Image (tube, rainbow, N blue to C red; front, side, top):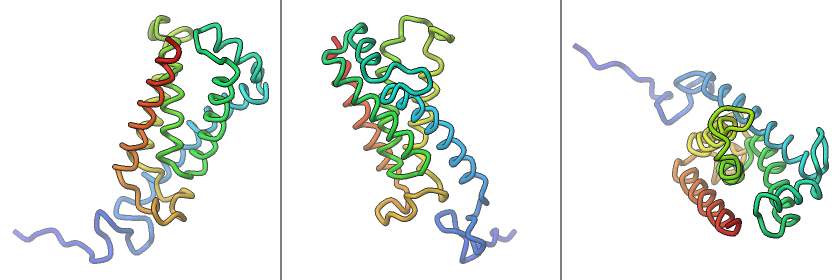
Length: 184
């Protein structure tokens, strides 16, 4: 019995001779699709809050909602949520600073989960949608953006490290927890 041969140019940690990696381009295409979907959803929701686009309430309407569900300084919280969703979503689409972008989405959606928690699981009043976005964003933080991402041009992020994702998610959970404590 002989050991399976491995190519010196293609190991689990390096790209193969065609640049597609040992598993092909499928995982990278899948991560790109996931980033685009989650990022576009979040950026659109952020634009609703920030600009009032897509039938949104803008900062004023969002501030009124945030105040009605117990957040202090509704306008400030609305602005933070709007900017976080808009720019976090856009950064996910680009694959730019992916661990932080995914953490921004995760933290925002943890707060959305807390607001909707008593509505049950299933839509329209339940948390299934928010829970799916939290899971998808956290998965992107942990897996990285794939090779079809702007992060590939940034030397510290060129090779994704799980520790980047874990650290970013810890930051998201702590920040979301602090905001929820402010909510009371």
